[in-house]
Amino acid sequence: MKTITPPIKSQGIKTKLVPWIMELRGELTGKWVEPFLGTGVVAFNSKAKSALLSDINPHIIRFYSDLQKDIITPEIVKHYLQEEGAKLAVAGDNGYDHYRLIRDRFNTSFDPLDFIFLSRAGFNGMVRFSKKGNWNIPFCKKPNRFSQAYVTKIVNQTKICKEMIQKDWSFVCQDFREVIPQAKEGDLIYCDPPYAGRYVDYYSGWSDEDEKDLFELLSQTKARFILSSWHHNDYRANENIEKYWNKFNIITKDHFYHTGAKEENRNPVVEALIFNFQTNMNTHNHGYKNIKEEQLTLFESPSPSMAQAL
Ligand SMILES: C[S@@+](CC[C@H](N)C(=O)[O-])C[C@H]1O[C@@H](n2cnc3c(N)ncnc32)[C@H](O)[C@@H]1O
Image (cartoon, rainbow, N blue to C red; front, side):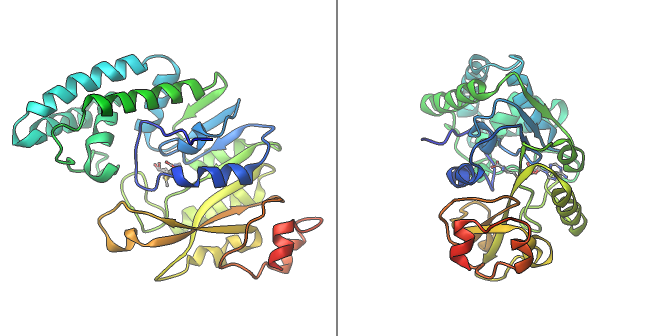
């Protein structure tokens, strides 16, 4: 099935990994709990009836929460983008004057529609906030960014996300330490925290203490969890896999990121899914063949994929 893509864009968006995550997830009986929602692409493809969706970035949460409450509708998005897009097309400095106007307005009012504008007209589809919490991405330098076709695309993305949002989905702006303990047996927690040191901004700093807290919370939960992380790239291995996560199951996959100005960010990364349940998924443990004995004691019998890797 085609992956649903949301109207918000960001570096590190997991669109390409959605089928893999959903295959691993299997049947969902309880709530979908996602403490690091980001663009929401994984949640919108979860088909969950009930969900707890959170992020410490209030702009993301406000946009989706307003969409759920009909404060924002696809029609409103359409009118807004048509109007602002027309102003952008004729603005001075090749459109930059209007981009600056929207940026400055957003940094004062934090209007969720301005957030969509900036997310879709910023350089390379990136989202970054300064230390003061202000929008911090330059213009993509395309004054005709909001062509009719592009507006229709964004409006359709808004429409499909609106259709996916259920009554029993809650959007909250909380730290993951408040969210994970709310998950119960039968729920599925999907975690996609910032990758330490890769894209650091106001909302995506990630420290050793954060990683340790996440590890402790996920070790204690009665819910199933899937954690996205990176396993290694051409330069180095993710030390946190060895330090924390290798007591759980890990499967890996090659993935290419093309966003980001840094050379390092353009290299292939071996993505990892770390999880605390059995799977029948027929997938190899690329780069992680030594499943620890202690890991096997967590389960009554190893899954076929684990048995294969052994
Ligand atoms: C890698 S992104 C998630 C990307 C998302 N899976 C997607 O595909 O769009 C990580 C997210 O975690 C959020 N975040 C960072 N620190 C957090 C914290 N302490 N608690 C909750 N969310 C946090 C960031 O604002 C960011 O949106």
